[in-house]
Length: 187
Image (spheres, rainbow, N blue to C red):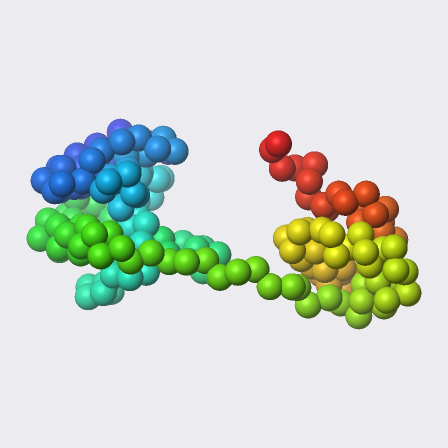
């Protein structure tokens, strides 16, 4: 990441945010602007662009149609506005967006994540759980996230034999209450 290449753009964007009541801080290594402790926007440079993140951008009108959802299907509320040069930064438009983000925060607009639902189980796993009461009891004790990991692990195998092999691999993990990806998670 060549932050130096974006110094002028970052300085301009920061100056627009600093003309408001937002408070500046550094979080996750980027400039973040908050209102009463709540994240409103962030500014960060990347290789090919510098961006503004609006943490509750999903509620903004986006009248200029500039927003990007960087991780469609994953990112729910966050929206980005990317700039490739200083010429692309229209001060009046960016200021209007920042003002709208502040007003939305004051209005208490907040995205409430949907409650996780039980995953759809592949037939092979469903049959194994029906045939083994202890396995089913252990599976039911797992978090929905772990249940989903196991279901996806089997479902993503293309060949039936691979699905069967994966099922045999995860049975001891289920019995021990260990998630498929626990070894990669920080404790």
